[in-house]
Image (cartoon, rainbow, N blue to C red; front, side):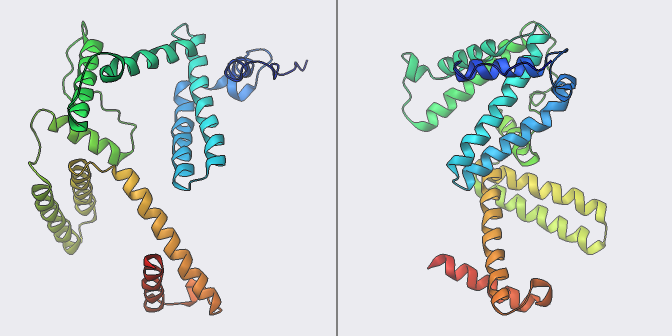
Length: 274
């Protein structure tokens, strides 16, 4: 028997929670939603976060509204599954983030004063470290400072977090110059393996190069994922310029050659500077 959707005059968040509960109903819900677990939903959660970032990159606020809704639905989905297990519910999730934000902003909600943004960031990291220590209190001591850096993060982001954790205890290059010197060293090792024709060793050296690049990004306070997204967008703009100019000549990229496309690439760069 079909049942009507939760009433539209409910508070929107309450209606969404009710919709999720209906979808997970073992008798009258959606078979696909009912069979999902935290593990099977997690990839969708990551995907929705990327789609939010994409809408922001495109400055598409209408799309951003929709993508934020999709991401919120993921939070509701996970919260509902946890509630079914008696672990926590959506209200507990909201209460936890409320408490965390108040706790981590003592300069806003208490009497703490920071002299600079750098000092504030240092205070933030100290608060996070204290929270990690509290979480592990009474448990077996972690084997490594790196143990709770999530393995599911994008590799570049995780590299930044790993190096940041190590930097917190002094295992860090003193400045960007030393990082750049290390990058030159790793690139030389990559070139050597490429020249030797050893694909597996070249793969490993490529990883070393990227890890040092992530370190450099951290040193410069640059988000490497954000920087690479911007470069991806730039590449897309310039390659579409090449396609458009070739189309004006009655050609496709397949009918062109590197010299012609490289000249159009330079033209695309010049057009962006105008």
